[in-house]
Image (cartoon, rainbow over all chains, first blue to last red):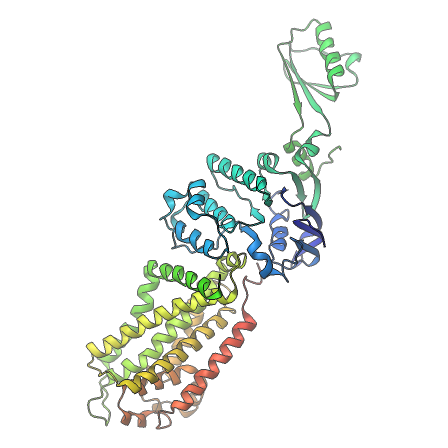
Amino acid sequence: MTDEAVELRDIVVRYGDTTAVGGVSLTAGRGRVLSLLGHNGAGKTSLLQVCEGFRRPDGGIARVLGLDPMADHDALMPRLGIMLQSGGVYPWATAGEILRLFASFAATPLDVDMLLDRLGLRKFERTRWRRLSGGEQQRLSLAVALVGRPELVFLDEPTAGMDTEARHTTWRLIEELRADGVTVLLTTHLLDEAERLADEVVIMRSGAVAATGSPAELTAAAGIDLLEVRAEPGLVPDGRLADFKVVETTPGEYAITGSLDAATISDVLGWFAGAGAQVTAVNTRRRTLEDVYLALTSGEKVYR
Amino acid sequence: MSTLSLGVSRGHVELLQFLRDRTAMVFTFAFPVMLLLLFGTIFSDSYDQPGVTAAHVFSASMLAYGILTTAFVTMGSGLAMDREDGTLKRLHGTPISATSYVLGKLLLVLALVVAEAVLLIAVGTLVFDMSLPDASHWLAFVWIFLLSVTSSSLLGMAVSAIVKHARTAGAILNVPVVALQFISGVFIYPVIQLPSWLITVSSIFPVKWMAQGFRYVFLPDGMRVNEAAGQWELGRIALVLGAWCVVGLVLCLVTFRWTRPDK
C-alpha cells in the first residue's frame, strides 16, 4: 500500500457494545517517533493492539511495514519490537534468563550484556522477575522489545512506574533508536515525554483523534500567549489596554492575554510606565503541549 | 532459528520455572507417590498369582495416574496461566511460532513425567519389592509411556481452552482426572467389580488403557485374567491411545488461542 511504517485508515475497535476506537486514521513515517497521547481509556492501547496483530480491527485497514498485522503476522514479527503494558513474563525466571530467551528468538539479536548495562539491569541479572520492582520490570520489558533489533517498536507507556533516572535513560535510548532509523510508536500520558521525544503527536480523546501535529505545531500556533507583570497592586487598566485582557491574579501580579508580540508588549509595558508603576518582574509564557492537551481532552475548544 | 531450537530454549526456561516453584514441584511429584504409599500399605488383596501383592498392582497402575495428573494438569493449567497472565500474548509478539511454544511446554512435561515415572517405579521396587520386567516389556513400556504422555498433554491443552480463569484450572482439570482414576482400574482393582456400564464408559477414555498397559509391563502374565477382557489387549491399547492423540491434536489446533477471547 505505502512505504510508511504504520498506516491506519478508519480503524474501529469495539468491545461488546463499547467502542474503544471509533474510526482513527494515522500515519507514522519510517524513522519517526510518533506519540499517542491521551487519558486512560482514550483508545491508545486498543489502537496499538491492532498494529501489533493482537486484535483484528472491527473496521478499517491497518498496514504495518506495508503488511497486514494479522494475515502477515509471521513475516512481520521478526521486524517488530513490542513492549506490552504489563504481564507476560515467567515470574520465576531471572532478568538475565528472560532477556536471553527473547534474544534467542531473534535472527541477529543485540548483545544482551550491553542491553543489561545500558538499562541498568546488570545488578538484577540474577533476580527473579517477581522480585523486581515495577520500574525494573518496565526496563526489562523495554529490553525485551529491543533485543531483536526491530525496525519498528511499539511501546505502550514505556516509562510508567520508572524513576526519574530510568525515565531519562529510556528517553535517551528512544532518541538513539530514532537516530538509527528505527520507527517508534509510543503511547503515553506524560506530556514532557511526548514533547521531548515525538516528531509527531496524536492526541486521542474517547477513541478519536482530537489533534495531530509536531509538538511545535501544536504549541506554536499562538506565539506568546501570556504576559505576566509584577508591579504595585491595584492598578486599573484604561482604554490603551482595551485590546487585551488584563487580570490581577493576586495583588500586584497582572496576567495579560491577547495578541502579544514585541510591539504590543512594548505598548503594555509603556502603559505601566505611564501609570508610574514600579515594574519589578516581566515574564512571557508560550502555550505548552500541556495547555493544548488539557484544552483538548477536557472537551474545550482549542483555538488554532 | 529453527522451531526446534526455539522450543528447546523455551523448554529450558519452563523447566527452570518449575524447579523454582517449590509448591508446584512438591505437589506434582509428591501426590501420586503419597497415594501409592497409602494404597500400597492399606490394601492387602491377594490374587491367585503367587508373589503378586496389591502394592505391585498399585505401583503399576499409579503410573497412569502420575502421567495423567502431571501431563494433563501441568499442560492444561500451564496454558491457562500463560494465557491469563499474558505470557502467550507477549510470545505472540515475537518471532516464535505456536509450535515452538507448545514444544517448550512438551519438553517440560516430558521431563516431569520421566521424573515422576522413575519416582513411582523406584517406590514400587524399593518399598514394595516389585520386580522389574525384562527387555521386551520395557519396549512396550516405552510406547505406552509415549502415547500416554502425548495424549494426556494434548488433551490438557485442548481443555485449557474452556478454562476461563487460571485459578480455577486446577479444580476443573482435576475433576476428570480423579473421576477416571476410580472407574479405570487405578484406584479400584480389579475393574470387574464395577458395574459393566461404568467399564464401558471408562473404556472410551485413555486412562483405562494406560493403566492396563502399565500392568502388562510390570505384572506377571497370569494377572491378565483380572482385566475387563481377561486379556492385555496391547493392540487395542495402542489403537485407543493413538486415537486420543489424534483427537487431542485436532482439538488443540481448533481451540488454540494466543489470548483470552475477552481481552
